[in-house]
Amino acid sequence: MRLDRFLSNLPQLNRQAARQLLASGRVRVDGQVSHDGHTEVRVFSQIELDEQLLQAGKAARYFMLHKPVGVVSATEHPEHRTVLDLLAEPDPADLHLAGRLDLNTSGLLLLTNDGQWSRRATAPTGEHPKVYLVDTEAPIDTAYVDVFAQGLYFRYEDLTTRPATLEILAPRHARLTLYEGRYHQVKRMFGHFQNKVIGLHRVSMGAIQLDPLLAPGQYRALTAAEIASF
Ligand code: URA
Image 1: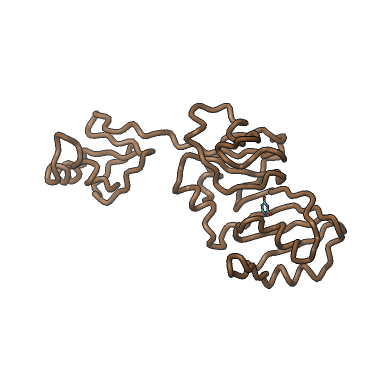
Image 2: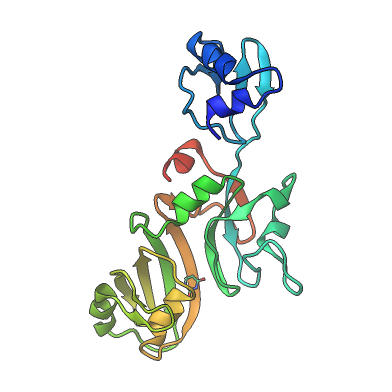
């Protein structure tokens, strides 16, 4: 909501009074005087009028979790433990996932209560690479590299995947960098060559790398720099 609307919605104020307060520099958003009625007010914004707190501002929360295999990337599940069960945080139900991983995939998972941030983190704009380590049943042929770089046609979605970078690290082990996140994308890409993915691990999303100090199932808050990277 815009700041002018937020102020004029208060029972004691109307639009004109709200404009005057803004013009006179009596309104602060997150500690900074704001004269601009267009300023966006979010649930996380702290709004003050003189010394009066109009909205405390909910704390925005951001975490990285080392997702173990066998834990489901959902907030609820009838059979499996969910990633939220791994968090010892107040109000875990307020948090949502910024991008999912399959049940048998491990690695970097981001959780937050900030919907704008998670939309940026997962936007299919091609800006933020996602890097996976892949183990396959059969050897990985060098022919995959060009096919993945050119893009693969996915009939179900009627689209061609964005160019992806494959680095073959060992006969059955590779690093794959994707710039989007389609359903079961990595498995389907290797499936094109009838090569089954038997291990999948996400190591990074954009500039955020899975912290090597986190064992599977452990998590930590993101740093300010990590948060600002999306
Ligand atoms: N691609 C997959 O196939 N699975 C994942 O969990 C992530 C990417």
